[in-house]
Length: 331
Image 1 (cartoon, rainbow, N blue to C red):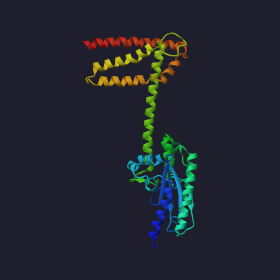
Image 2 (tube, one colour):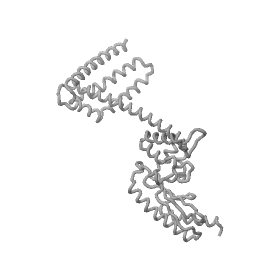
Image 3 (cartoon, one colour):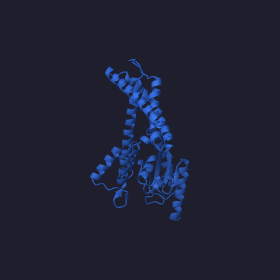
Image 4 (tube, rainbow, N blue to C red):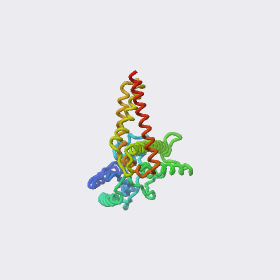
């Protein structure tokens, strides 16, 4: 029997056995997805017509998706699943177990080897999923990696969990010791170049988000304290008067709308502006608003008095401004 025919028989034997265990086959690998992980068996021929060595690896499904997004290779995400095991730019997984047998060209020995490998792989995967039920929170054991000199799988886990600063620190340290990356793009860019660019962009976006959230929290706090200040002198009041809330929520919007109507030439913009203001205003009247209201009673007497005076002065000023603008608009 020719070696080509023997290899085909071996491939068919492996495929038939893999199907019994829910694995799919592509070239020298068998793989399956379970619990958000990509489990892959790599088979290797070591001086035999039949693969007589194998290793079982694992990585979260998001790892390649995130890496290909960073590497500007998003088209790979829609490629067949086998690319995660055979692709040149696929991330290596963590080795769970290795298998080997004596070199043999006997088809019966090969079939027995495949059965043993897949039976054991099922047990290993079941145990792994019990110990690591959440793929999003999985961090690889880097002592068991299948050739990942750039630590890409660990870096993807950090980035996926919002730890971009830690990922940047690892890359900077690697740069300091003159580490050469495995993946290159052009003369001056490598995998770390792309990861740094992606992380720095994410860090900037997160900083902007935090600053916006800080402004929103401050606005809600001011609104809550103002509502409490105008709701009466009861020291133990923990909730504002609903009439005060309606006034301080609606009147500033009405005032801003009048300003926009007077000075904006675009006739449709004021109504869009009104809708946006209403959505923003009433989205602020949530749990955070009432928590600030409850905390107002614990402020010192002098601080609450200043809030009361300031709020009433501001409200009167807004009313005066409103009628002045209304008068101007009728001229």
